[in-house]
Length: 153
Image 1 (cartoon, one colour):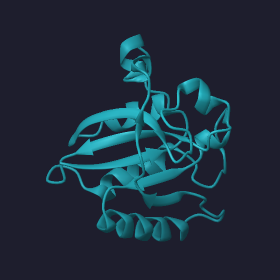
Image 2: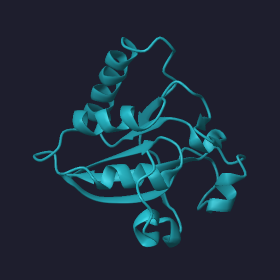
Image 3: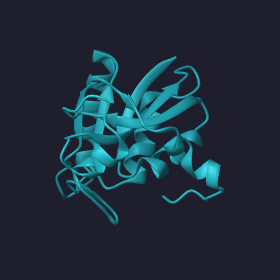
């Protein structure tokens, strides 16, 4: 199994999108990239912690490739809008990829470069080696499934 984390706006819809991909074994929503230890949703939504709402995607690389996951990532959000996705505004909604390995990092950077060739606006997606992943509160996990809400992207 391999893991990669994606920030592409509100993590509820992002998680729902990745849970639908064959080869994705598990997902968890949480926070990355900030300074505060063990942040809460309320902390992150204050837009003062530097964290990003992310989805940790565990996947079987023999069933789905990182490139397949990146295709979903590019499709479900606008990587050219800083600190905003749709109606969600704030730095916690910025576009980001947190990689587990140097190989993933290089492949994500190559994918961004390829994607940039088809977009006129500059991509603002941050691509970094994964930092500490803080798991979000239980009520955020599989939020749409728990509430019978349809996928929103």
